[in-house]
Length: 358
Image 1: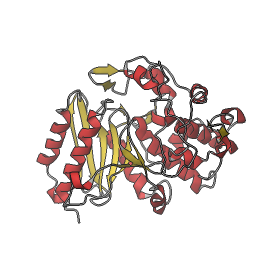
Image 2 (image 1 turned 60 degrees about the vertical axis):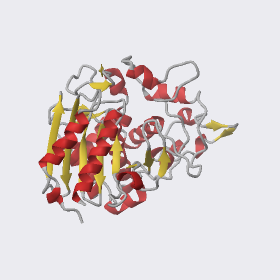
Image 3 (image 1 turned 45 degrees about the horizontal axis):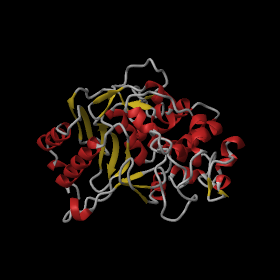
Image 4 (image 1 turned 90 degrees about the horizontal axis):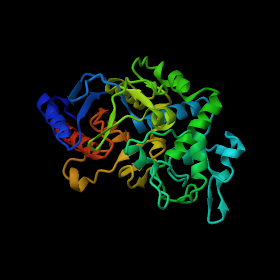
């Protein structure tokens, strides 16, 4: 049983100091709460303020999960639906051809949201002799990646494996671009309006929105190593996979609502835990149905005190939204660093905090 009284200011501040001490981590925000908010703490170091707005990047995908599962609950969508049932044929035709076999019409919504479609990730995929989209963006070369551009690009690549191949998964932003188009088709609304209806308004979030205006300077710029990045064209084009702007406080509100069952029946969360192991990029983790679980070998990190699972989502920008059921602790915030060093620092801090109360 967790003893939240063991969680003191000194330990939390030590964790923050450790996070900000990492090379190229120029700012960090950490919020820690339990379910009833009888414990709530926010700390900040560096350039950001506690209420700074930042790009939550792929933490957005947890909002997608909430939306998809809400649509399932409303019987407007099924995870077993073929994507060809919801998309124009010209998007689906030739999308997944592997070793002469066309699997395009076999791809389901579940394959997309669980990253088991086998489709290549347009973001990190590197054509021979050409840089990846990720490397160009990390160099500061801002460019948009609208849905049509992604589909045309991916159709020229060879899929990693056939849909739903046993024990196979690959992290792919392409899957989420397809999911976004399906959600927009079903609701007949722009994804920003869908998020607003299903999540932002429902939770009365005042500082959370989908980034669309390239002149909007409210979100803090991200960093890649020692380089400050400002990529408005790209961020405005990837609403579904990473375009939400929020604060640590409002990500926390969403995270707690997600696991409390405010978007779909709480008992269905168990069904999301169909884990497949995914190596980097972007990081080493387990991926379920629209849900991530951290890869934390017990023998290395906690051989004598099992800390249980840490589930939620990472963002490429160093953003995070995690929940540890065994201690009933939730974690939100960002290190605002896309190189990965911030992610490592967050993991170590969460483990230290969790172990202090079990």
